[in-house]
Each structure stands twice: as C-alpha cells, then as structure tokens.
Image 1 (spheres, rainbow, N blue to C red):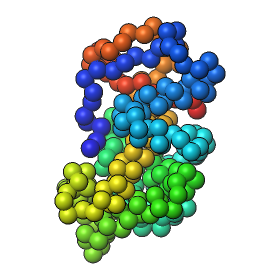
Image 2: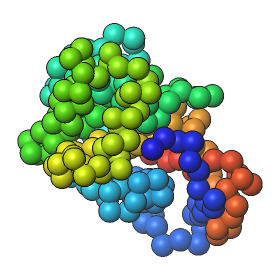
Image 3: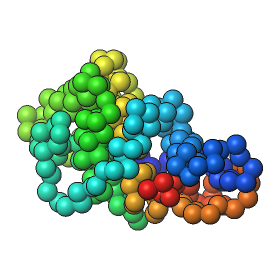
Length: 218
C-alpha cells in the first residue's frame, strides 16, 4: 500500500518519436496521465485528471506548517486523521512523506472543486468509519493499529461495505495524485527531465532508480 513497492521496468519518456500534441500543456498532461497510469492504473488516472482536475491541482498552494487547519469539506479532526493516513500510505524516507507536504489539504481542496457531493461523502464516510474503531479516534491508535485498519480496507475485507471500499480506493488515488504532483514528489521522489533524451522502451527499473515525473507542467 505504500511506495516501498517499485516496478521492475519503467518506460523512459520520449519527445521525438511520439504522437503527443505539440502544445506544451497538452504534452505535459499526456506525460502525467502516463506516469499516473503506471502508479494507480489508467482509468483511475483519467478520472483524477478529468473534470478540471489538473488545473485545480496545479493551482493549489500547500500549507507546509505543522498545524492542521479545517478544510473546505472536512473538520479539523477529520483533517488530522487524513494527514495521518496520507503519511502512512506514503511515509517519510529520504524524501518527505505525503502528510509532510500537505496532501491532506490537497485532497480536501480537490474533492471540493472537482467532485460531486456523493463522492465527497464516500471519502468522508471512510474517515468517519476509521474513527469509529476507537473511542479516542484514529490518530490516537498506534501506528500498527492504524496500518491494520487501513489494510482491512485495502484488502476489501468482507465486513466492509462496498461504498467504503470505493471511497478508500478514491482516497488512495488522491493521495498518490497529490504527492506525485507536489514539488517533493515530482522533482525528488520521481526523476525529472526537462529535456528527455531518446526513447529507450522498457528498461530495468534499477538502471534508472526512479520513475519519471511531470514537474514541468507546473
């Protein structure tokens, strides 16, 4: 469920031999769709980037401070839970984690501007359900207990309702989208090339060590 799992092969970007649109925004958007598709699947990536999703994402200014603030949709309590979840899904390693770079704020903003009320409620219901598991709330649990709960959702445990499973899938996709379009994720976690070289097809992942980001779009 986190970034420790890496692909075996990665396709290096190519400008010269592709049928990408010639305008820079379209070209970078296409690259971002391809990169996101590798991480979360093509259908999920297309849904995230549709409905003005990329424009909203690129205009978001993260709040990197330590204090958790109320969101446009979620209360302070749910935002704190969301930050903890983000940090568990993409933890801090040699680069900052998702919670460190305000992916929780990104998700709240993205849901508010790009999603209908029903989809917003699916994610809110996931956060509410996670809080029900402990009287003091999700953030009061140990890291091991938090991970056990998230893995129940991730494994689609038979006791979890379909709407909650769908909401968790959307939440995970938004975490990946928010992190890998942040400056930290796009320029440090992924490899960024402003002027990529020739197309090399599918090559062993360990030969490059990173996937490719689309930070130039921003």
